[in-house]
Length: 333
Image (tube, rainbow, N blue to C red; front, side, top):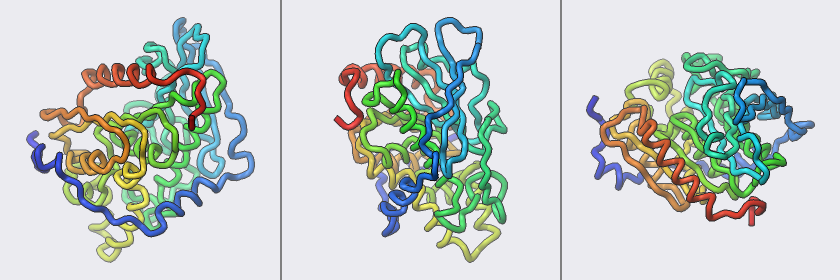
């Protein structure tokens, strides 16, 4: 379907100034500094027999927000003798980590690949294994985009972003991983999470957000034609007096604001006929991104983006990126 959003030349120049809460940085410093007892204990890592001989798969359990257990799959090439570069993937809206034997691309390319469950999700595409004990769903519309939206402290994505940061910390401490060669990536919701992590975690090797959600959220809620942005519009259709409160809460989780604090090299993808994550919202994050950046635009694609063509672009980009980083460096060197 032809896009109802801005044309490509206008998107390339689209860099609106988004309101930044005065306590944005202190809020995240406080949030990430709040580690419960045992919150950084050694993660559980259990080898799983998938029947595959060239890829090792581990069931991983680590402490996320509030010390709550978050699960994921870690896949690694068999026979590796040196510290591995690592790709950490955050999932799209509604997806869970799925079965142990799928998503082998990055492991087959010679990297460690960690797929993190998104708490409470996993009802579509692939099942999840991570509960959300703090749903904050009272008054929310169906879905996750309005859970706990009355306050930044209770909002659903506060917990998710903390989970993602702890996931990166865990993988940097893994004995088979080179902490200087860790890349985060994701499609849609996963792309927004990856951008947030890039703004919150120094020293990443790179970030690859694809058609990212959670960018310029006020615009997404106003022009997005399909969920999840329409969940926010539906909530405000019921609560006419809460618009300012809602957009204030959401500003702490706007990936475009996190992108403005990110310095790792980035490879974005944006689709111009995307009705789920309108291209102008994705370009807001790209145009505000503070680090070195590159972009692939898929002019006639919707939310599927560049698909396997873009996977090939990512493989080449990561190979070139890691080639410039020597194994064994520290994450901050």
